[in-house]
Length: 417
Length: 144
Image (cartoon, rainbow over all chains, first blue to last red; front, side, top):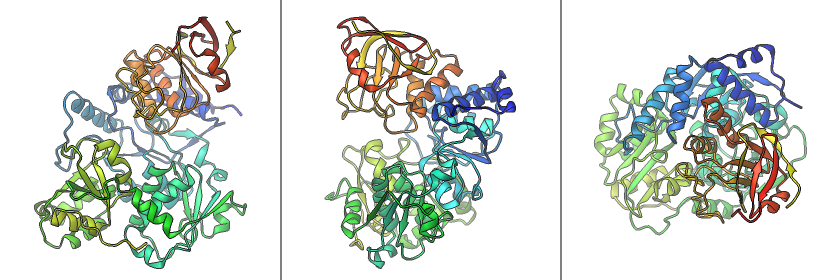
């Protein structure tokens, strides 16, 4: 079926301003995606503010110059510079200036300067069933899976074009039939103690993404009650090891009150039983420097840390000083609370380097150390750090990360699988 | 010389001609192609080191990042884009780079879809791709 635009959409696309440009980009993408119409959207989350080259900056500035404004609430994902946290980003001119211009242009388009990959913990939570246009893989998967709002995976240019046009192509995960689980992933055979460990969800997410790829799946047999930070870590890890845009957990996530609802009553195409050996293998894959005798830095906060995660960090540090820097990546929504509660100063004096508005794998922040080793509790950092920073990774729990940072050498407790 | 083939125009653009570069494996433009000069920088790609600039680029399939469109847009702006793109399956994210280029006033090359089973017949030749999606070998033995 070919694309049919509504009369008001056709009229908009025929204009000569920035909104017309946005509407044409949405319509052309819809045609290539095979959509038959556009949908109105309730909000957007924009990943386009990360600098990849001058043309991205010039595109955003063109939209501003042509008078475009976002038509719906639009939050911004991370940028390439730390504007709020005061962490030094080693980006040189002229790239630094172009990255700053790009961030300014997106704000000028009416986007909120949230600069976080966890907008869903910064007050941007669309309702279940609402169509939205979100970018950034972890934000997309959380929005679909945990909030039950509907978004495809929007990339550079298309995210902001949808926000300005107020429309998105009616295809992919916007359509209910594409949201049903086609693969069942059964974790009932894993020991109860596994689910109590704080590495359970990122490790499981990394395995899950490799198992399902871009297919919608449903997890069954989960014990305990994972909180939002656990689901955030699971989704982020799954979206980096596979192209996961939506997952269900039977009995837990909004579109999966039970297995039959998640699959729409249809027989699944595949059923995968997860074993302890598969989990152990997944955990091993997150470390590329397994036998490292040293660490050069610790990084946490991918996705960005919540205030509750800072509570845990403070409890684990327990007033001690860190021997190697621990980079804690977060958004200004959390930074403001830390400042208000006079908690930022003590953290920084202990040796925590707070990174706001951005993170250590998307822009040069880590010291340039040949053969450096980065310890992390994030499945997503573990996935991207080797390629993007040149550091080898060592994966552990938050407690392992803090103990290692305090002692200055890797300390790994025995994992629960 | 073989008879002209007809591809489906996916994104309208300038007709182009140049040596054929038929990729032997799927490619991720982000992290796989240098946006400054069009060189294939993915060390795991069998044609690592080849340059896509000014070639008629045959792409059997694409993989990976949502930033592929940014890389293709950079190539067009820098004047180092392929002379034409011939792809096996429509990739909305990659082709978005051409759509945005046109909106920016940077004339994109034409992009057409063609069944990858025909790709090999163009290998090693110079190829012309028309604005209507016609592909024709214009000079034997001039491709890569």
